[in-house]
Image (cartoon, rainbow, N blue to C red; front, side):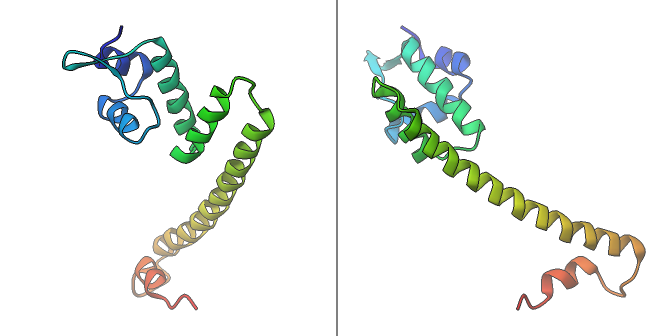
Amino acid sequence: MIAIGELSRQAGCNIETIRYYERIGLTPRASRRGRYRSYDADDVRRLRFIRRARELGFTLEEIRALIGIAAAGEVSCADARGIAAAHLASVRARLFDLRRMEEVLHEVVRACDAGEHAGCPLIETLSADAS
């Protein structure tokens, strides 16, 4: 049996994060030995799975679905692929938005450096009517 501090170390998750995952049902409630939570190797594996999925930007609901697929015995690659493909589309959309933001910020910084405006190009850009 593993104490929560050791679980935190082995899984690379903060103790409060572990408790949060238990509260929202992403991980099963830990068994108790007196006042203390007690974990095992399955808990370490599940938390590592969750941590890796979070590092890839999956939402908690997507992770919940992936855990369900993994726990189903016969892993359905098609179901997991569907979740991953939707997530990939979301990542690509965010990258597109980030590139647009980069272009605007690059132009504002360039304008500041060139001294082309009497005022501040950033403030002017932020104050401009978006229509």
